[in-house]
Length: 394
Image 1: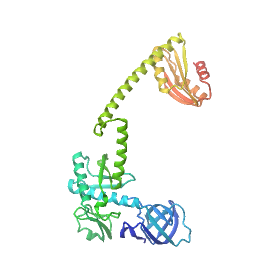
Image 2: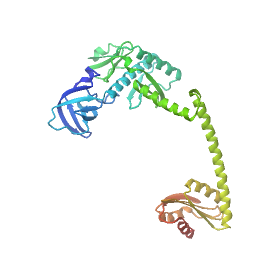
Image 3: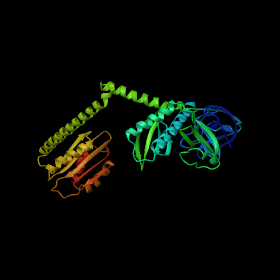
Image 4: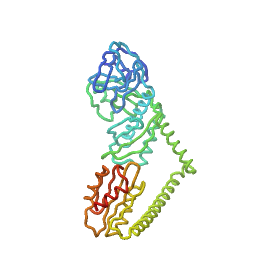
């Protein structure tokens, strides 16, 4: 079995090792080493990244008691020794997030009686599922303050290998689920937990924890948070957003939300007014079209670059007044034709039957109700020519 250096020293970022196996599986080329500092995916923590002999390590998985280092390109078969280098920023980030999760879960369990049921360390944020149906703001504030106090207290973080029987003598938050030896991560007086992940030596290296919000997840809640450098990254991102908002809305930060809310309210009112005016214009246009038709049994118009929903609104308005007429509205665009085909209420014909005959002319698709259909296709024919062919069918 591979000797796991990350359990001896989580801060070891470079190492040299003998190659014991070079192979390939469905995931790609991989290497097995006599010893490694690369942490494989497991326990909610993602794998390390880095290089072996300057070749990128893209994944690390523990398969059949082998720590397989999946590499971007194959090693020469005669490779005997490798020089490994861990992506330090990624490793330290994972140590901060994982340790922060331990403290957070301990506080929720011990202080508020809410156990953690799962943990996921994502690329940008971390989540835990908590066995409760609701979290209120007061509880979240208290929990966040207590977690950050433990971080500031700079409590030691220890790890020990022991038997399951020995581990049971500690105040574990949940029973050990493995046989044989177990690795216990201990934050004295705070957390005692069987864990195979990487952690810093002291809680102070977690730097800080910030809750980002929670959502319902089945009968539980999912709490999202960040630790360490990610807190600074989130603060930087939010500061950039607020700075840009202040440039667009010249108000103090504490008034931004109220001011933006007022702007959105005014915008919605203007949108409503515009919609009403557009409706009035369509009604006026519809009356003009009906008047210009002078009693024609087939009314048709060809427009340039008219939206299909505008054609539909215009068509419905016209056909409500022209109860004895057919209607053809066409929007001619650069590469396509769109149309509305309708009939007045005094005509009994099914417009879907007409649509089936005209759609092949433009290699199109469409359909609707017996009195009102719409469709579109390629501009393989001029809009006026298309309208004439429809008129002949009608």
